[in-house]
Structure formats: C-alpha cells, structure tokens
Image 1 (cartoon, rainbow, N blue to C red):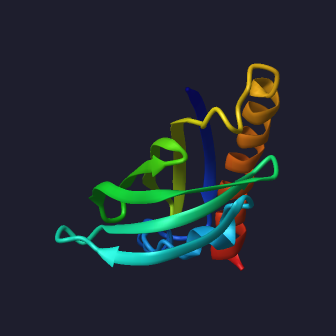
Image 2 (cartoon, rainbow, N blue to C red):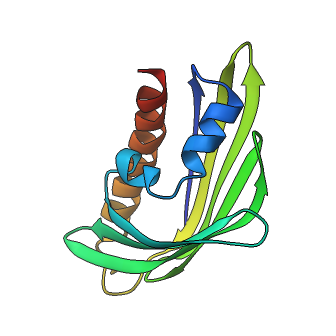
Length: 143
C-alpha cells in the first residue's frame, strides 16, 4: 500500500476547483501518467464512473475510477479498481478567494509493476506524479 499526500493553494474558488476535478477527462490534463479516461457514466448522486489507462514504469494499467463521496466545493473521494486498487481524496477549503487543496491517495499496485526491487522507485515516481498533478491543477486553473 502506498500513501501520498500533497497540499497546495490554488488561485481559484472552491467551486471552480471542484468543477474541474469533477470532470473525469480533466484529470488527463493534470495527471502526467494518465493516458486516457473513457466511458464516463453519470451516477444517480451526481458523481461519475469512468475507465482509465495509466502508464507506470512502461506498463499500461487499466481500471475504473468511481466517485464515492462528493460534497460540491469541499470534497471529492474516488475509488480506483482494476489494475490499481485504492482511494483518491480531494479536500477543498476557501482561502481568501482562493482554495486550499489537500490531495490524499492510498493505493496498491499490481505485482506486474511492483516487485520488491522496484518498490522504492515506484513510490518515488508516484509521489512525483501526485506533486505534478496538484501543481498542474493550479497552473491550469490560474492561467
């Protein structure tokens, strides 16, 4: 199990940040290893379910991401299933016209990608991915 935490301040309102992360295809714009998001389906509670393709260490991983908790302008929690199992959580808080974003992820990687020798490399890679994701979100919404 890997755990990644990132915090960043985004010069956009919580409503703007939530609207962006609430659109599954936008994650391709901000998550470096995410290749594609397809088959986006609306859920009865307003959330979404989609299929993803993610490239890690030269291996393409395929799975599903589904919103499991959503509070517009304050929280979005997504469950990953398939090649990667885990949870991604976005916590949003207003901050003088901007947004404080807390990004937390917990996930397991498949044995095809993560061997005992590759564990430290994969963990460092995913920490960089999380850092790049929140920075790209900030840049995308601020420009």
